[in-house]
Image 1 (spheres, helix red, strand yellow):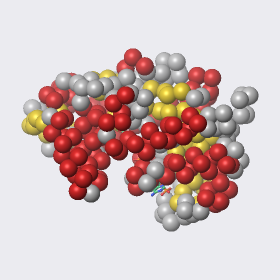
Image 2 (tube, protein in one colour):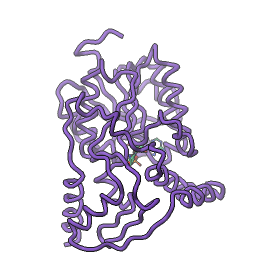
Image 3 (cartoon, protein in one colour):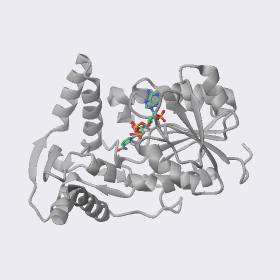
Image 4 (cartoon, protein in one colour):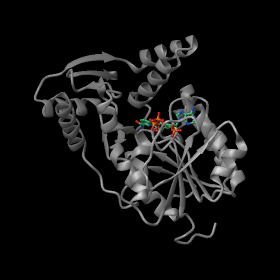
Length: 307
Ligand SMILES: NC(=O)c1ccc[n+]([C@@H]2O[C@H](COP(=O)([O-])OP(=O)(O)OC[C@H]3O[C@@H](n4cnc5c(N)ncnc54)[C@H](OP(=O)(O)O)[C@@H]3O)[C@@H](O)[C@H]2O)c1
């Protein structure tokens, strides 16, 4: 693919109203190199900044999707929720190939899906299928896969990481001793811009973004320091977490299963969520924010919202 400064000007963000989209969109809009549009479901009530071109489409209509993607150089999917289970990205990739899009970034942003144990949880299957599909289409449509590990600020605010700042309670998996990599979600916007501006480095590659690599025990120590309290700690094993997730999956409790599988694979000892040695931050000119800072700010946010 011939690349010039204008090769990747028109950028479409899909699902831009979600947690990830909300941080990516302003970073792209702020950069005059890009002409940014968003694609949103016809039935969605999401709203967007007035300076962005909003395209609404009926996602069940393939022709409408192809039309929406035509003229776009880059499509960044940040779809979530049901879209992941239904694998809407597959439909989007097929439409992108038909529309002549040049570069596709699928909705991943977490695990190292090139790790051999990524396939050990069923909820990763759609994304693993999309990786194969994108590699098949590589001659027409380039891709970049992004592994950013656990979203640390988001994970603390939502208690998804099983650290509950408001109640000073934590759950440690396998004694909290396994290393985990993660990013402050706030930094993902800057990282996406850097990825689009370094195509020689990022096209047809998996890019690893890391702000901090830590154990749950280290995270707990920082939380106790910044809250100046001793926390209540419960212990579980990832083995029992996976067993429960499998039971939930078999019973059709899909959301519980989904969360159980993700948390288990984040905290177990196989390293699917640990990639400190592969981080591309420096190569992309991205600084890092320390875990201490991330924890400090999360505690401050919780204090502000509690007042
Ligand atoms: N590493 C981590 O810790 C971490 C944490 C959270 C998320 N993630 C990943 O980040 C990605 C985005 O997650 P998110 O939390 O930002 O997602 P989200 O907020 O749940 O949803 C993002 C957007 O997807 C669109 N959407 C919802 N249902 C859809 C459907 N059925 N079909 C098509 N589009 C639909 C919506 O946009 P419109 O209303 O505009 O259509 C929605 O605002 C996912 O791949 C997720 O796994 C990673």
